[in-house]
Image 1 (cartoon, rainbow, N blue to C red):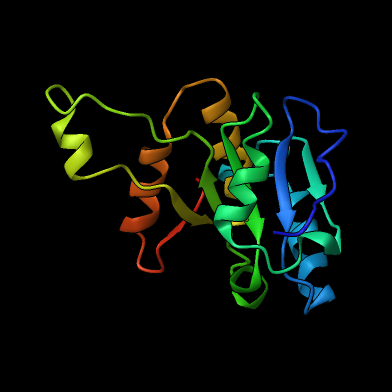
Image 2: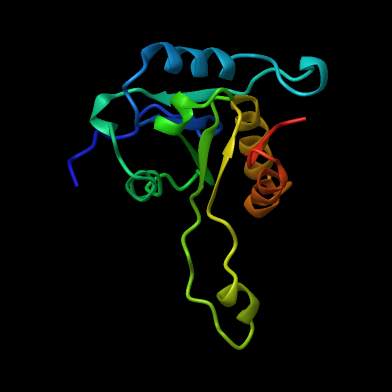
Length: 161
């Protein structure tokens, strides 16, 4: 894997957005604009702070490669990726990746998790970034709950309320 620049300057409360597709600048600017919009019912919530990684050194990285780099940040529970699917999607759905690493589970107690591990990724509209990041940061919800909501959507996208 190529050497990547350090993810520097992220406040511990900022949602991390990493751009990996550089084929459509207008689409990226639409994602950035969507992230800055109020969200929730009737736009009652102001957007949370986001840290954008917009450096072509990250171009074409796989989700696993992004995870390996993002896991160096101990204060992070989720990373959002603006990939080719994001840029081509009418919804500008970012890929949400669960940062938590798989642990060695004792099969005697955790057979259900071993047989059916929780989802590690899902797509979310830009407004959902604030909802997902905020709720995971305060441990109000877990990653699997958001993934289930995304998988229940006809387009398999999490849509914030």
